[in-house]
Image 1 (tube, rainbow, N blue to C red):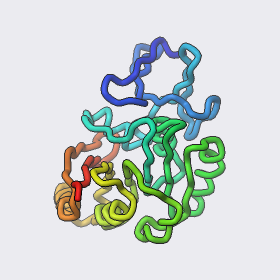
Image 2 (cartoon, rainbow, N blue to C red):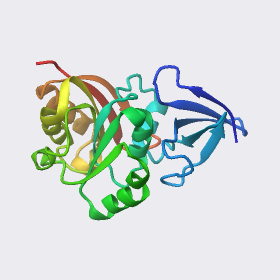
Image 3 (cartoon, rainbow, N blue to C red):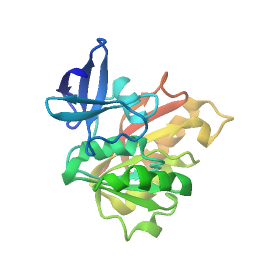
Length: 233
C-alpha cells in the first residue's frame, strides 16, 4: 500500500508515491486499472491506482530522477513516440496524456509490436500501434496527425536526423521533442561525449533550440536525454 501520493510539483500527470518502507518513487496514474505492463508494482491510494515508474527500465523516469527540469509531455497532448518497443515507457506517456491525449507508437520490430498490441494497446484507447520504420516517416504520414511532442528512443545511427525528419512532417510549430541518445547505437568507436555533441549539432542545424542535456548514469550507461524546442518558422 502507498502511504501517500502527491502530484509532482512541476510536471502534471506525474506523481511521487511514498511507500510503507519509507522510500519515495515516481509513478503515473494507471489509465488501465488492474493491469500492469512490465511487472511494475501497482499501488492504490484514495480510490486511485498508480503504477510505479522504474528508472532502470525507462529513460524518461531516469531523466526525471537525474534532475530533468523540462517535461513537455502533458495531459491532453498528442505525442508521436518513435521506438515504442513493447510499451514500457510509452504506457507511462499514455498515463500522462490521459483520456484527452493520444500516443502514436511507431515500432519496427514485429515481435515488439505484437507485445505492444496484445499487452498494452488492447487496454488503452489512447494508443495507436504503428508497425513502421521511423527512418521513413512518409510511409505512416496518413496515420499520424500533427502532434504537440515527439519522444524518440531508437537504437539506430542518425538518431537526431530521424527525429528531425519526423518533426518536419508531424510536429506543430514551436513543438517540443525528447531524444534519448544511446551512444553505442551510433558509433562504438567514439567517445560518448563526441557523439552527443555531433547529434546536438545536427538538431541545431535542423532548427531546434536545445534546452537540456541530462546524463542518465547510473540508470543507463552512455545515454543522455535531450529536450529541445522546434523554432517557429
